[in-house]
Amino acid sequence: MVRRVQSPTVATFSICATDGRDFGVAVASKFLAVGSVVPWAGAGIGALATQAMANTSYGPRGLQLLSEGLPAQQVVERLTAADPERDHRQLGIVDRDGGSSTYTGSACFDWAGGRTAPGCAGQGNILSGPEVADALLDTFLASSGDLCDRLLAALSAGDEAGGDRRGRESAALLVVRKGGGYGGLDDRMIDLRVDDHPEPVMELQRLARLWRVYFEETDEGALLPVDEELVRRLRLGLHRRGIQVGGEGRDSVFLALEAWAGMENLEERLRGRDRLDPVVLTMLEGQL
Image (tube, rainbow, N blue to C red):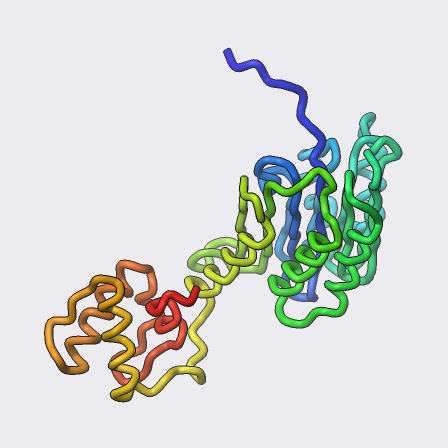
């Protein structure tokens, strides 16, 4: 029989946000596999982070209330009012209209608190200080790009500002969009987790770059014309990877390239033999 110990406090800094289309949560902590506990989001509904002595039932219950049209502040009030351990909880919510709310129970360990702005809520506990929450919100509001970029920029800024004062261990990114999941069959567009790593935020950023390689659509306007110099680079890249090209011509190079791309899950980025996705070249040359 496995004996369970009391759940430890999820010392965490997180940000819930929306850009009006997508909803997401980014989180980091000195806690194993923080992504399995803190982030929750529903496409077109909202996003939620539950932490400190986390109450994971806040996730599904909060998303249900948000789906009924309740604003973030009312959802926080309902969840915490019904929870006898609310003084030990921390919670951040963004609703479908960009309304935001954050809650920190009186028994959370210092430094603990949060900030809100339209479309985002940042919070944390056992932090180096309030500058972490400030960095989360200020960076998110000042950043550009899609929601993934902005959440990662905010998380990195919180980490650089001191983050969890106990250290680093895990990080996660969850972004949802209607039909944005694998094959368009669900809404979970990005669900990346670093469960145990000395630099989890940096590793999460690396995984996000790989996600773009494998799942973002090819930019047709950025395709490279295939000339002799590009064929030479492809041949050299294949050689460095130990892949033999069967002949001297372009077709031989592309036969080898196509076989390699199939092994690397990059076949969807191939566009015949007259144009090349620069992402394929970058991966072949080992720059990601």
